[in-house]
Length: 116
Image 1 (tube, rainbow, N blue to C red):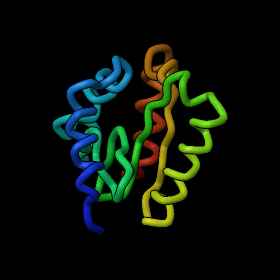
Image 2: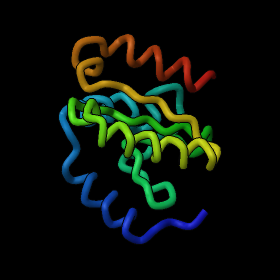
Image 3: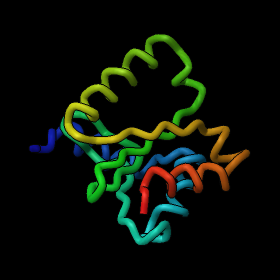
Image 4: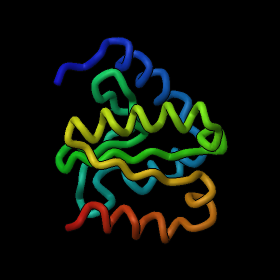
């Protein structure tokens, strides 16, 4: 699968402007801290950019704030998920509020999805 140049540019920009929830989750995922799996942040897949990706097991993690509750954004998210699924990726959506209020549960959910 080739990378879309625009997606690569957007991913680079997004790495500089991670949300607080993304930064907190990245502290768990970076440097193979979670079950020795390598995750990438703001990773382009086709013309989309996912918040976190573990290419070895084709797991994409999206961290969603309140803006994802709008009908327009939900439709956009559904198109993105459909593309990822048809490309062989699993998608795990996590709410910002869960990262802040239930971090242990988020960690357990990710470990469960990794399946090691």
